[in-house]
Length: 149
Image (tube, rainbow, N blue to C red):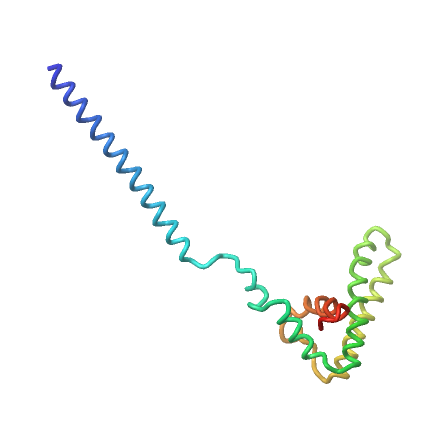
């Protein structure tokens, strides 16, 4: 009886051990397959997708090509920093209420200068076609004052 119990106990231990190792192999194999599948999938975030798969230089180049008239370029050279200056003034006007008329005046004057420039150019602003050009103007201005646009 004792031998039968020991044999049964040995068989049970053997079965448990083989099943545990089989489970580990299955989990490991499943993990490896999942990681291989994950590598084949495209990344969730692509740095240029938001930018239309274009570099900064390509955006600035297209922006420059639609701003060729010298009056338009001068109006944008003055208008863009005027708008940029108005933005921190708007934020400061939360705490200093007397600043909001100056911020509003600068903001409207900057946009007026840009639209006057586009009247000379004879073309509508680029952001009428693609809203992302609203973010390109400041980069174009920065490139222009550094002699790159």
